[in-house]
Image (cartoon, rainbow, N blue to C red; front, side, top):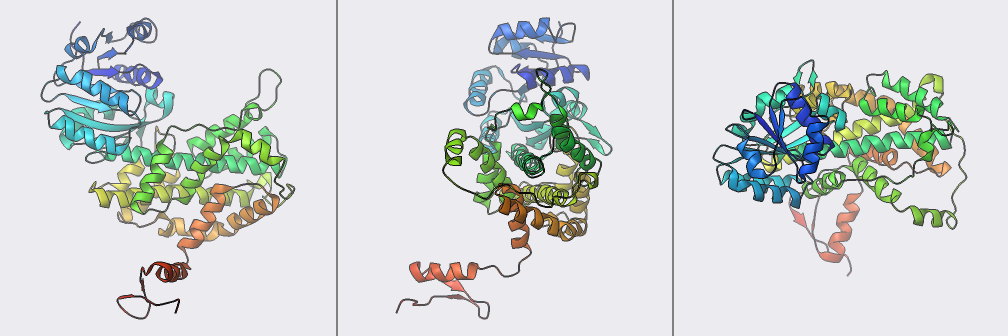
Length: 472
């Protein structure tokens, strides 16, 4: 068999689907997995009859690739990526290119780019979003590294990516670890929206006593609007409509209330703290998952800690898309996107990534988990002002905030009185109210800091730094 254009290491679900995507689009491929039995199983199953060959070891794998070699690694982030790089490097030659398609920490990718390019190898850190179906049919891809390395794979990834009205959902993100940083922030936004929809579900169920079908009907109305039409709203409707085949009850009610996570939400929050970006809605979603993991403690605490009885309050009418609740969902989703984009803007400046914000919004419009109609508005906002400090001050988004803020406040206050936790809704309300307040009470914080630690403070009426002997 002739040499292949594209190589894949790691035949997990994502790896399998990506190589099938590449082969379907005309790129001959060779695959390698740490256990050859998995390779054989794939070649006899989903890979049968396709222009895909297997390799028994890494030397065999490299030998079956045409020059320059283009190799996608789909292995677990962290030490596993470094191990594969160490094992394959002796077989690579100048100009060969490694691509890390997993969810790696962008700082690890920075290190790997420098390490491999010092050996004249190319390295791309590429975020891939879309789940198993997206990987097969067309994901959103976020590649970062040197521009010459991206140029070597542009035809491949542009063909494999999801396609929307203004092009493929892939672009050169920028140098170093920029691709993986953008994917990390994508996942942080995803965490936020998932928790937001979960809070809306919880209110409809516990406050209004709605069935899965009744809640799904509301989600269906939301998905027909410009503000909320999205993949996550679409699949939430599906989840709420799905019945347990054993007894016909709502399947979602049979699922344990403990959410998993793979680290990217945490990385988003840590990066934001390090860079001075405010991401309270995203942080609240991360904390929601942490709190959910404390199942035994929560069960015990419920018998000890008293709260108000859950009582009915105005969430709107189902036949009117539950307008106040929709207001809360829209503004919280806007806040999640706004916080993610603000973090990317700050990181772009701090790390000299020169991120193209409209292009990032464009490649998220198809294939990825956070794809939505709202991204067209986000793309337009950053086209008008590439240095837009916060999405909420764009005229279209500002109008959304001004019209929907009363509804969000009504939902948060009602939930507080009913004892129903709504961390993302609450954090979003505080975020918006803080952002629109010209003078916050941190002047008192500065006074306290100077009082106990002589940290000094600035004045509103004079230039310079000042210190007061507060405790004479």
